[in-house]
Amino acid sequence: MDPVYRTVIGLARTVFFLEGLKFTVTGDENIPATGGAVLAVNHTGYMDFTYAGLPVRTPKRYIRFMAKHDVFENKISGPIMRALKHIPVDRTAGADSYQAALDYLRRGELVGVYPEATISRSFEIKQLKSGAARMALEADVPIIPIVIWGAQRVWTKGYPKRLGRTNTPISIAVGEPIRPYEPAAELTTELRSTMQRLLHGLQENYHHEPGAYWVPARLGGSAPTLEEADAMDTAEAAQRDARKQAGDGAADV
Image (cartoon, rainbow, N blue to C red):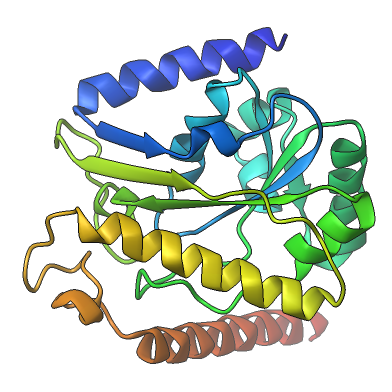
């Protein structure tokens, strides 16, 4: 039992109700009642992690998410993240967060990861990092894909948040557990194809507004294509690195 987590979940459900969010969850029977597992979640918006917790409540379990270290430094979100026993990821000391995730998995916990690493501006499944596969292999636990659709309408990168009563429908699909196998690259490829299939399945029964920013180009929306989004991410990363180098240079003067 985790009283802090239970309290936060209760507050989150109240917020969901006030926002009028309409959830459809399928495949929650794929969440194991006991034992460790890596939960690989697609990333389209800033609120994904709150919605990803819904399927695991069927067997009354909790997720320990791997999240950027910055979130833990925030005076509001930091204490909450630590109380919920989430895992801070510091890019300068990645081995520590990786080991912490392995420890959780070996103790029978569910560890949530975003294998795309960043929000997908195209709302398609980006190329995945291999971390989820490597953790599953080393801890000898399954990977369970979770795909969320509609979260980008609430709050996503580059657009204003919509946290009022929007009555937004949000669909969540949980795939069957994938047993880990070598090599990690092939396991990662299977994970991505499975997440793509789940995503397309959710989109089939979802109403998409033509030209809307939250709709993929493939479905007639104005979101960038996967290739265009990747180019935007690359340019943004280059600008970030340039600012950091300029700051370091100024500090050295």
